[in-house]
Length: 144
Image (cartoon, rainbow, N blue to C red; front, side):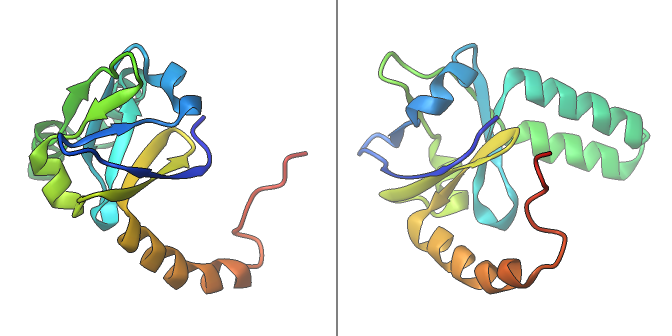
């Protein structure tokens, strides 16, 4: 499980050192792909296979929607292996999509992590916090 948020920096080569807590989970390989709200999703290879199986079961594979999801999803994925220092190099096209320049935030979101531009993350949190605080029962599930 990926949890927590970590302010980090991209180096001049587009590399970011993943949080230590995440490194073991992605040591066998991972993908980075376009996410919603102009962030990037980081997924283990195992999770990508799970998502694809679920998607294939839910959507007939011969529809235009299924083809578009597959093309855009798999076509934007970059398969990566962290180096010995736990760094991944984010391809330029994905950095451009998410507006990543220097300061980023890596956010754990259960079965994936997200990489956000720091200013975009701050704006997103500011926008969402009031609504989150006002939720009655849709917030954090009880752990009992």
